[in-house]
Length: 294
Length: 311
Image 1 (cartoon, each protein chain N blue to C red):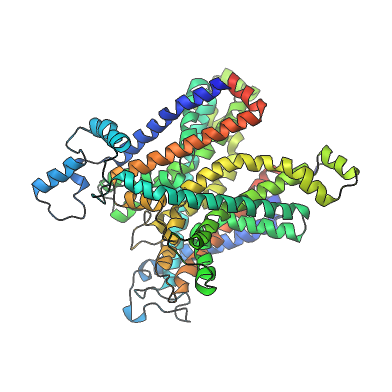
Image 2: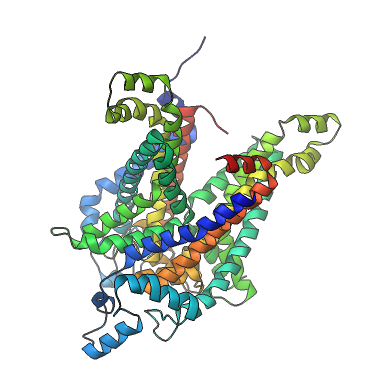
């Protein structure tokens, strides 16, 4: 007798993945639901209460301008998560379309398209993201009606998404390359289904599994990428803050004469916990969809 | 084999040119904007003089695709925008060896730590040692470098005071940054080694070795390890490339005057000449490195060679 279980049932049986999911949902909810308060509180400076360690009133301490680190960490988390998900979404869409086209048409077009992927793959992705931000920033900031801060965030999402799609494109292309030879695609073509219809109705549902797995693993990658950028000062600009930029502020005040550990530890730990749980969830999703792979 | 090598070698300049071209498209600005930011109202003569020093009086194509590459590669007198008294070549000449040393140390750490951890995990598969090491490697992969780097810095540099907290020039200053840089790669190598070892221990030759009466330890070290290391070997190429070009964050934390520092600074200041130089160095290095690895692989494994010749 074959017992068939749904992917969700298989996912639920994995304790690490489930714990991670709970952690992540809690974290996301805390960051998003507190936005109404944290959005203003993160900018409220109080120099009389600057650089104070954790107390009952300020559980995560205050920074050198006396701003609440709790508010800054929550707001930074909301921004980190949003940017990560947005960039991952851009990467998934871009990579899927690219891979579909390359795999379906094959031949020379495929060769040229994948050569470009190889080329971009060879470059350090962080360098590529930075170059993209340099290229995109002036064009987007020139758009009317878009504030400077909003433009910056869109630039970041586009740049990070613009380098994270490469592996998605490779995987999708590989899958499509074998799928397009199969009878059901040929049958659809014989029935007169157009190319877009074949993409949407026949190919996409068959590759959705790997795409979902990649999507869950691309989100932590994107968050990590953003935190590096902000850490290096190329990402979000003050007064905006993400976990990466907060940790950068914490590292900046590090000195041999003692340091304000809460400025570095809290954003770092929150970011690490989020990344870890996202990675565990990604592993769990993969196992749930493909069965165990070790 | 020779044809394969020749074709790959011929493609190298084309790749580098394509990357150079895209970089130019991304970073090029109108000449007037270059010195506009930050400085207040330069007198027109001074501005014209400055622009001329960087060939902004020439046309777009002439500047980016003839004069700059020529001054960069042949005469070597192209100045950086941020430091007009320094040529790009001098700056890179100082920074490149620093990053190469850091990268070499980091790669060595990554390989040693990774293989050791993989061996320990595979010696007791599915036990608590294995579980712990798997968890640790996932942490190593997940944590951002600035968190692990800062943690190492605080513990080893500030509390224990066993190593200096930053700077460059002494041997003792290389350990923390190299270790920080190595950790994610060590974690990945550990996973590769463990998986390879577990696979190899199931193979017929491992069973034969056990049947011969060898201990589990001896089978692992003398028979399985050799085969398990093949995937590690093929990962070394991309890892070395990524370690060498991925030191931006580590260099920032530990205040190391390497390539990464210049990349970040030049991008923040829109220093076009320095950006192009760093991109050129990185792309030549990366593509050349991939080429060497592929060729080595083709030499080692005839199957790849045949596949490449026919495809």
